[in-house]
Image (cartoon, helix red, strand yellow):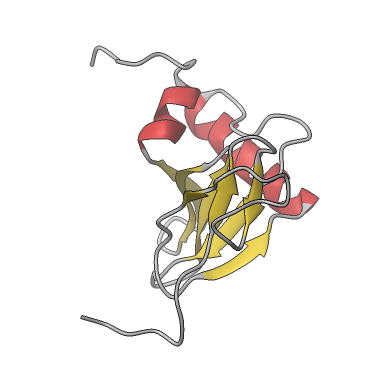
Length: 126
């Protein structure tokens, strides 16, 4: 088992729709733990980051992933270049990574991110 310098702390309050560092939100609601990828280098997404995510998903999938005004958190994940997990609405939506060979950004959706990219459907025929 790999050990890190501390516990990977990221919780989400479903009532406030905000990231929290503890098991209880200031509003009193219980929070949901978000299972982020180690080493757990969490930071807020700035307007440039959100624009990059939306430009990338629009280019790949024809739709912007992050709705206007949504609070987004990024978690640095291991990769040969830059890769960040994209977290909002209490779920990891996917990873934004830079592909060195192609010299471009690519979004790799997780299940919840894929659902949102296909319009919130629970299933998809391929």
